[in-house]
Image (cartoon, one colour):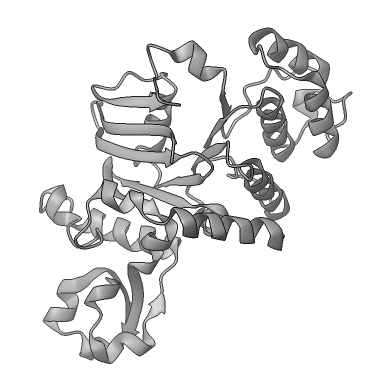
Amino acid sequence: MNNMLEVTALSKTYTDFTLDNISFRLPEGFIMGLIGPNGSGKTTTIKSILNMVEPDSGSITVFGKDHIAQEQEIKRDIGVVFDNSYFVDEWSMTDVEKAYSLFYIGWNSETYWSMLSKFRIAKEKRVKELSKGMQMKLMLACAFSYDAKLLILDEPTSGLDPVSRDELLEILSGYIEDGRHSVLFSTHITSDLEKIADYITYINLGKMIFTGSKEDFVEGYRIVSGDKKALTPELKNHMIGTRTFATGYEALIRTQDIPEDMQADALQATIDDIVVFVSRQARRRRKDEPFHEMYEAVLPASQTLLEIHAAGAAGAAAHHFFYRHAL
């Protein structure tokens, strides 16, 4: 399986934040969700990939090529969609087409106008007259018109209404269906990734927590609950973040650590559950212990981050096909 994107031991230090030793691989033909709370390092990672930020150490290859030495060649085949539009407000759809056609050798005008029609974007509109959802679709239409092999999206569904979000997810799902394209999708709206992601890379406070198939990520954890009186020291030791109520508690726990008498009542954890509980645990303990100890209980047992990544390609493909054809 070819990798569209490989990030290895990426690190970047700022005055008040450090992105530390981030590694992941995105195979051809799949969607990877890049997740983590705001300020966790997702945007720094993306800007490093796009050579908008210079890392202190590490390496990045895109399509098997060095992202700096072969930057211009690589960027001909990358489409980028940010939370905010990068078009000039006064541009018409014709102005957008003219600007892009100057920079991309493979620009296809017929595809561009066809995509605008498909996305119901009127050709007489100016950029400033488009809603946020329509501006996202315009950025995608441009990327499709030069057949970008890799789409990199930074919080693309933030601020979109539910209908526009679902339309965008359907578009992305169809985009990778031919097996020649891939998507790196940075978001804090994890419900989007429940629908379409094949792989998950999770960063928190600049540290890598997980990279691998979505199925491995969610199957590794369960939600347990009960009376606070039943909280034994051993059970507390295995918990990864806890919510307490007047009548009881709710906690995240690794599937393998669930006591036998609680297994039948344990609930499947969602991506959002995992992110929320792990983030709470990290905030409570960040001042008291090193990161490697803090996250020791979070990582799936007996697997390194890159070993986790290698699993699940066939299952991911089946999941993606189901979502695409169930819409």
